[in-house]
Length: 265
Picture 1 (spheres, rainbow, N blue to C red):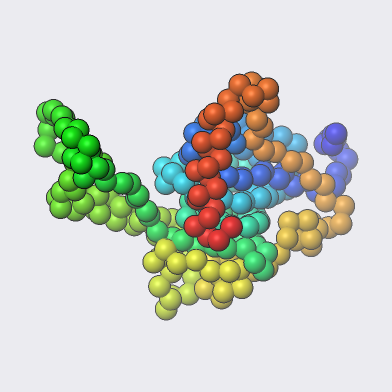
Picture 2 (cartoon, rainbow, N blue to C red):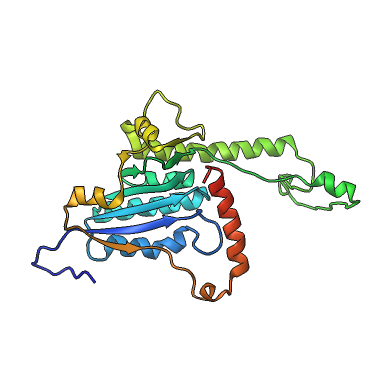
């Protein structure tokens, strides 16, 4: 236990918050603003840390949850005057990069995957299968767009057009966040917002991150060899430790595995 005593010069303290997994996905270990709020509050306030370091390993997820978590990090950092450093492990893509961009500096391993500054919506269409099986779909709505993109009815061009507008607006929000956070560090000549991904060295050249670096060496470089670390992160729900949520955990695991697979991980 590290005790911060008044009138005695304590060793520098860095609070380490682990952000690992898909964002906003229901189930064990998912990253959401509700789940992370008490963790981030403790990390920024407990013991008056000299900095907060984010360990990020996320393929992305909900744009809303990414924004809420990132905004909370910024509010706490500015309110308490605590700098934030992000350290990327395997991947910080899409919403994962949104979280990383909420830090004042971003560092990564040589082989870390970064970027994917875009928005995706995926679904399926089963109306032909239903017709072949002799199943008739019956839907009644009040409002012409209430059943937009129903997977059991043929796709409508007007529905796709509406969806593209929504995706475009979310993409604009993502781009604005990255530009606001990275500013003049970004390569102004490169198109960084196509959804492309890069390894860390190329991401450094593009200004998406600040360089190659790992958490402990970098924090010792900044705060000295005597720097101390206090770790925070999500814990498994009590009942899930005894198998009470195995089904949900299995589904979440499959979905999360698919999200990481998009980046070859």
